[in-house]
Length: 120
Image 1 (cartoon, rainbow, N blue to C red):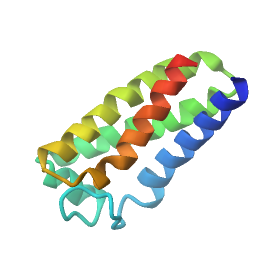
Image 2 (cartoon, rainbow, N blue to C red):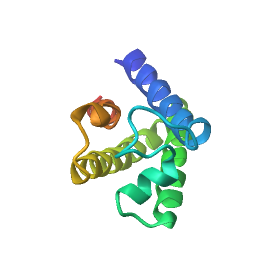
Image 3 (cartoon, rainbow, N blue to C red):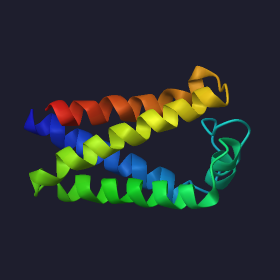
Image 4 (tube, one colour):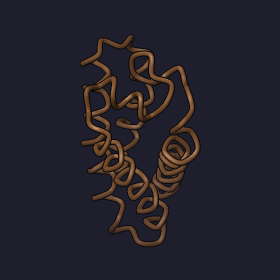
């Protein structure tokens, strides 16, 4: 179980960092509505620009906490729990704008991995 937890922490952390630091300004097939950047995606959901900054800061913080959590295990539960909340929110936003389920797959996969981290 220790190796599974380690793998999940690394996969989730690197996934979050990739999305929020490397791909935030880029188009992907998973962006909500027809957005071509993170900023456009949040606007498509009807969310203010400051919300993107808050969510981004939280997700990058979660990623860092999960990586540090490899050595400091007490960080994993709160980080994974917060990520569950955020991934439910992401899924709800895709539903709100009536995206096809395909666009929700990344948030659902992250949600499942975060739940697994809480349960391990």
